[in-house]
Amino acid sequence: MTTPVEASDALMRAGSYVAGALPLLLLAALGGVVRSMQAGRCGLKAVAYAAISAGFAGVLVHLLLQSSGLPMGLQAAMVGISGYASGELLKIMAVRLCRWADSALPCKDHGDHQG
Image 1 (cartoon, one colour):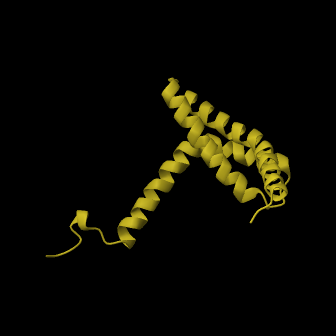
Image 2 (image 1 turned 45 degrees about the horizontal axis):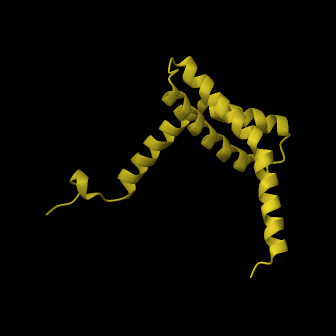
């Protein structure tokens, strides 16, 4: 069972991590907003979607780079670039994942079975 002191320490560590990652998350989200606006999608819904998907991509890249030992400035640049490219990257990954799933998993809906 967790003691109140252990729970407090865990909460402090989590808060510290979130506070450290927040600037990178915002940088990634800003990259997505810039990309959306450059593409001419300036509506609130489009910009919000771009910021959320870019923030998600930025968090994933940050988690991958966290223990890389790269300088923080380089990590921040990579997170920002991932946010800028997130819309296209997520589409590419979704297409590839769907192709892999179609080839790796039998599917009744596509007529892949007989009978």
